[in-house]
Amino acid sequence: MIPRRRIIPVFIPHYGCKHDCVFCDQRRITGSSDNESGRLTPEGLAADTRPAELAFYGGSFTAMPIERQNELLRSAQSFLKLNALNSIRVSTRPDCIDGPTVSRLKACGVATIELGAQSMCDDVLAASRRGHTASDVARSSKTVKENGLALILQMMTGLPGDTRSKALYTARQFTRLGPDGVRIYPTVVVRGTGLYEMWKRGEYHEHTVDTAAGLCAEIVEIFNEADIPIIRLGLNPSRSLSGGDAVAGAYHPAFGELVYSRVYYNKALAMLDGIAPGRDVTIVVSTGCVSKMTGQRRCNANALSREFRLRSLKIVEGDLVSGEIIRIIC
Image (tube, rainbow, N blue to C red; front, side):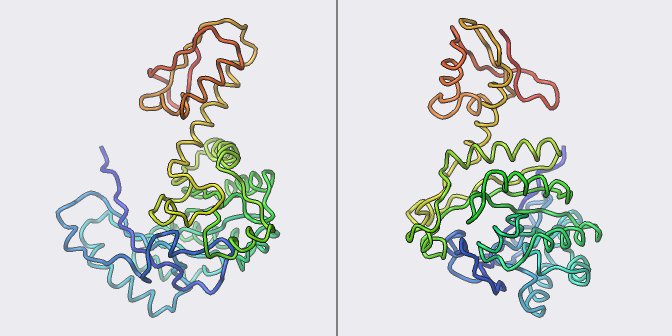
């Protein structure tokens, strides 16, 4: 069995980024007040021989001065020597990537580049003050892939001017770019951001947790069909966000669970379509997925029982063939 890859994060919140996106406050989002909350201490990691990846998160790595980028990358070199499988990941903006930059990063051991694309709709990007266009996303994604590096794309739903159809369009456009993984972040109104001021003035209407979960369930299906892994759904829970800095929008500590629960519900809904009332139904799911199918406080189970007027409904674990999510037994 291949050991699970460890991610060793080094946060550089907002460092290097010259833009002021309406939704952004990296310090509140990451819970870090320093420019760099992590320290590279590879000697302390030597006892753990699992494959690992050092990840620079939070800021726009390639927007920093080159001298600072190289300093950070040099400090990671002894880390790379710990294990031949170790590598480096950086997160940056689509308009801060070009061929020479990717070649330099690759030579320093960078194997993965994450691009904060957010949307493939120029009007949404402009309303969010992103400072780049959808064509920048396509160009930079192509550059990363052509240089043999792994590409991760980040998208957001519910940004100013965004709609369900635009979000689904973005997801479909992402699949054409061939990323090796995606992160999906529904917009959260964070205290102190430009979006927070827009929200207070009534210029921005947030999507709720429930609405965002439904939309993201549709997006999950798009990426699943394209066989593109989803690395993250929703912001990582933090003391700051849970403590009141997330004032509105789709923030939930278990947002991913809510989304996958909706995916399971949609699958069961389609499979039960046309069933006669009064039937006894058993839904079989893979190991560990009963809670996803049942839903929080049995919301999925209760809704299905009412919708199809079932006499009984059981949700059990079972052996499913590869690619099968659920099986219905009537």
